Amino acid sequence: MELRAAVPGDELAVGRVHIRAWQGGYRGLMPDAYLDGLRAEDRAARYRFDGSGPHTVVALIDGAICGFVTTSGNEIVALNVDPDAWRCGVGRALIADARAAMVASGHRESILWVLDGNDRGHRFYVADGWAHDGTRKVAEVWGISVTELLYRRAL
Image (cartoon, rainbow, N blue to C red; front, side, top):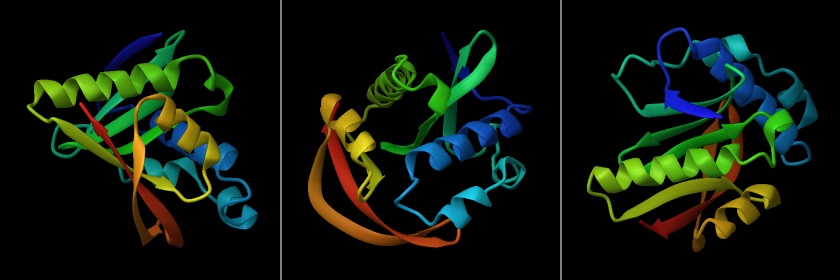
């Protein structure tokens, strides 16, 4: 597995991972019709890997993007792994890289939001030392209303 910064041209591959991760991970938490209607091309059009926005690191196996993590300041704003690469260490490598980058930038704590009911995500983050701090919010994500839980971790 290789980790590197996302670069222009990675948008569609990252979009595919994003959609596949949501379709695999959020089944039963979001309407099937909504998940089935997601398109990688639509998501890819929103990404900017030119250094002007949040920072994204991609994971590659055999040269193909199989996961990514996006950070902004001390927040992990996205961490998605293609279901075919689940339980292969991709998520652990990405989150460790994100934490190290935040520490190098002077941050001492990190936050992230987890979809309420995402038991797989909850187990993953707790195993990495994160804890839900009790904060909940209702947010609009890609046109659908969801409840998210705030997780924190000392760096």
